[in-house]
Structure formats: structure tokens, C-alpha cells
Amino acid sequence: MDEKRHDMSRRHPQPSRRSRRAALTIAGATALAAIAAPALAAGVSGDGKTTTSAVSTPSSAAKPTVLLVHGAWADSSSWSPVIDRLQGQGYPVQAIANPLRGLSSDAAYLKSRIKSIEGPVVLVGHSYGGSVISEAAAREPNVKALVYVAAFAPAAGESTGTLAAKDPGSHATPDVLNPVPFDRGNGTDGTDIYIKPDKYRDVFAASLPQKRANSLAAVQRPINAAALEETATDAAWKELPSWYLVTRQDHALPPATQRFMAKRAHAHTAEVSAPHAVMLTRPDAVTNLIRHAATATR
Image 1 (spheres, rainbow, N blue to C red):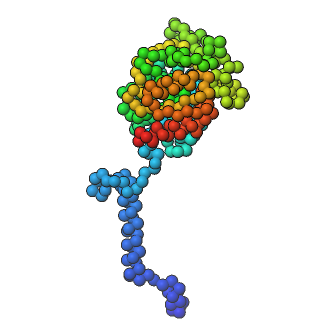
Image 2 (tube, rainbow, N blue to C red):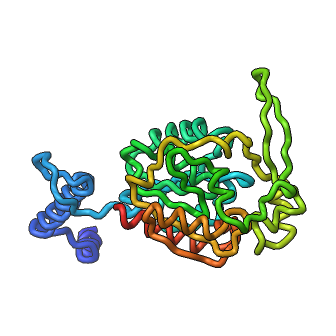
Image 3 (cartoon, one colour):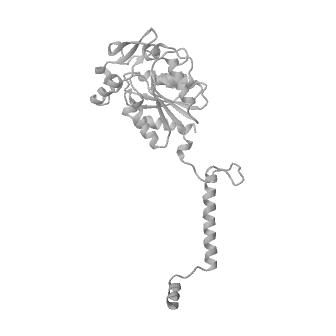
């Protein structure tokens, strides 16, 4: 038995006092590191004072929220290719369902959404969505930049319809539009404006396959005719930095009008060969412009 115990002790030697002390020291240091890590990540020193962060936070935390606003004859899903790219780069993204009922009421709806977001916001508008962001961003301190994607940027006193008729070249003429009366539910009527399905591809998305254009035409969101006639009361682009993507093959909003609005707003301007639905046909170009705006205003 004594021989057996002796043999066991040789195979499993007991730790010395020195090695036990070393193990305790390592364990203590590990525990202190675990306790200190959250404070360092939060930028707080041991005495509770704010310090320079010793642990980098995720890059997305410092990035502004990108708030996307569609226009007439589309819906929020039209931003999907851009959303995928922005989220892949760590940007928080929201795409609202623009009511398309009236400029003042649409802008009020967007303002409420802006106020619900903590931190800086980059507002992006396509087509009539540009009119809405111009109105809604006024006096909203967390909006840091405006991005116009083949979009209207009216001045105070101008309407979307006035700008749409400014220059020749639009294919969105009365003969390709389909006005549909609707009941407001309060005893009054309105008129929704659609693009006729067989004209949708030419006006809105000329470079997309016909099958895809047919699908988009079937789900297009109409705009109340009154929204196109309502004049703007604010022009946030006068106070905020702006970016503008001009679409050279646009059959809905003539490129000449786009360039006029971009120049008037002193916008950082890029041009791309694309139809009006550029967020579907050239999502990389749209994403890059938004990214430049977001980076420049951080």
C-alpha cells in the first residue's frame, strides 16, 4: 500500500506553495480584467470620470441613421437593394411608407418619424420624396444632411407640379397617367394619379426587364393630385448640406430640371446613366452617394 501511494504521488505531484501563489495571482488578474472591461468600453475610469475609450465600440454605433423616403409610383420596398448595401456597411436604416396624400401632411408624418430617432439622421428622398424631406427637415436639429435621388427640391412657394413642368423631356404626360377618383371618407373626393401599366416601364424604369416593370406597375403607390399642386413652405436645403444624384436617362423628371435644383441648392452632385428608378437599377451609385453624405457629416 505504501509503495502504491508513493507511486501515485510521483505520477501526480502536489503543487508547491510558489506555484499555488502564482495560480492565485493569475486568477485574480483575470477576474479584475473581467470587471474592468465594461468600464473601459464605456469610457469610464475607476474613479467614475469620463475618459478616452480604451476599447473601441462597433463602428455602426457612430454612424447616422439613414431615413429613406420614396416618392410617387413606388413604395418603401423600392429601396431594398440600397438597404441591403447600407446595412452591410453597418448603417442603421429605416424606409418609411410615404402617405402621398399632401405635402404638408406627408412632411408632418415624416417629422414625427425623425423625432422618434435618437442621434443624427441623413434624410434621403426619391422623386416627390425630395419635396417631403425639404419640408420636413426644417428646424430638425438631428438631421445632418439631405440626399436627393432624382428628386424634387422645391423652394418655398414652389410646388412639385410646377417643377415637373419646368423643362421639356418628361414622358409623364397626361395621356400616360391614369386619374382615379377616391372617397376621402369625410364627404369629399380626391383624385389618385397612377401611371398606366403599359407605360410604366418607359416612364419610371426603362432599363429594367419588362416582366419586372410589370410587377412594379401592379404595386405602384398612387399620389393624390393635390399633393403635386401644394406649395412648399420650407426649403431645408438652404440650411443643410445636400447631395444630389442626377439621372441622365430619366423620363419622369428631366435631367435639366434636376441639374437646376442641384445647382440652386449648392449640392454635391453626381450623375449616372439611369432611369428614374435609379435605386433599383443602380443601387451602388445611390449607396455611394448616401455614404459620402453620411461620412462628411459625422
